[in-house]
Length: 507
Image 1 (cartoon, rainbow, N blue to C red):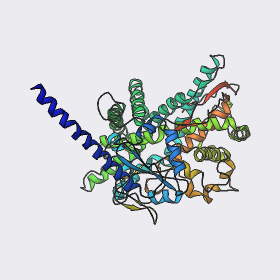
Image 2 (tube, one colour; image 1 turned 180 degrees about the horizontal axis):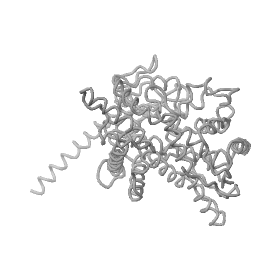
Image 3 (cartoon, one colour; image 1 turned 90 degrees about the vertical axis):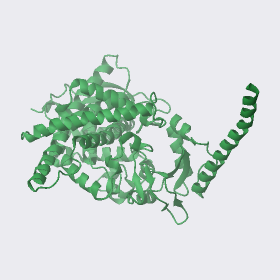
């Protein structure tokens, strides 16, 4: 009996090996066929491709893709059984952005985003459904709403700046890493601006833990089994969306009683209730995208869009202001001409709008270090990218926002806020290359909110604190977390610059 089993296994092993070799050859042949004349590796590891190098060192991986695409404007690779195309050329990127529709490209936000975010996420919508939802979201970003948010943003920024300065001062002015501190500040800002009074302190702490699980899972292999980071991230997204849907219920009740909006969800629910009432009066069905579960999911979309990108921008702002003291001096001079800590008042929207140079600095930070460097799409069918190359159906396509930021602009490798001055107006001359907020139908609806947050942070940080970065070799290198940040996490020593901190409140 044992002999017969041994004989069977000895006969089976060559068959298994042959079958595996066959699969590898089929996979390799398929990759080469899809690759065609595109630059990229000739041989890729079976099944996983270059996923290990992507996870182990994303900076080096994406730098290689960019380098490979320097001549043709695009390059090919293979990750986790999926063929991918990296697009460096701005015009080719716009070709993708302008063709997000059911028969061309789908925006996915993450190579395996549907598993994380769900099938009905805002970023996967197109056509009239997408337009209708963006119309319903628009009241969240009116001048009145943005004014409410800027007040909340400043109070939270001040709270955290004081905390950071205390951490540094109480540690004999030793440098501290800002990366996690900025991330925590932005998470509190997002929670407060988006759902304000509807999150308890306990809920905020659980929220923070779940968002960290989500962040970690974004950078891991998409293995959706218990115990793996990606699986934990997917479950965390479900819990976060459920928490946010509960906030929507509370906001609806408050707005139904004619209270004044105090956060983003209030502005949204205020308009939504009007639309629901109008539909009922006309005998029509309840409008789409008004269920609590859907709202919770869309609120998570906002959180994802605002949180990590903003953390990246604020860290680079500190790093770049430190390495460009002449820029920092001009920012401080401009801010002091409009606002003083001794005034104990918030920077109002008119003052914010008039800080032209600080606005230009913020825009240059976003150009020079575009936080979300890549915008993943899926090719729904074969798409002719150039006369000589067609993107195969199913390809993950990565238009590079960062590469576009270094095309067209005058001396693009130089950090130069004056390029956005009224005299030069490079934001208009090279508008197509400024893709930080995307382009086309899916251009970021909250870009004014994001820009205001960066300008307010730069103004308050520069006016209230003196800072010195601990510079080391490679500290300005780019790392992915998942948006880009300085390699050292932006390590600085801080001290108070003003005679006293302002006493800011909403009263």
